[in-house]
Length: 190
Image 1 (cartoon, rainbow, N blue to C red):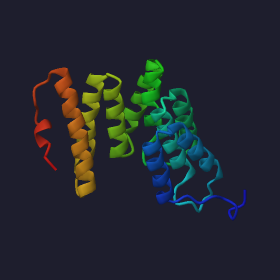
Image 2: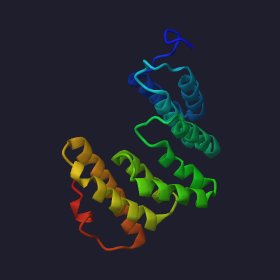
Image 3: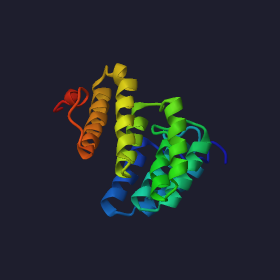
């Protein structure tokens, strides 16, 4: 496909599709459309192929099509380019959901050794572990995430992400019956 014939997708276009899917509940349709766009998108697109694949995988998860979500995340990871959320980390939820616990744990070991690329990816791992009942691991990942990224707390955006991480970590601690600790006391109302 020539660059002239390639599709260009804006963040606004992507937001429109995701809002439509949320309002309509048509997550599978949105997933298919985003995957189609990922194969048509050109290098001049504001939203790259890998990001469209990640968003398609998220829609497959919302549609409870975990095998398709996993396959889409694997395709995104094979793309080799970075997305906002590391597609390898996003594979953890579908792997646990499908009963592939050993593979999920292996992937967690790889991600832990590398250190997740960014705070949103780390939060996604913690939330996935929490959602699938792996509370001790979620708590550990929450603690590690705060330690790894606390020095980036220089903007309101990062501050809010760190607070989100700490809130999830706190909920996990409550579920585990743990007493409040120093990190829990860092949670603010804003």
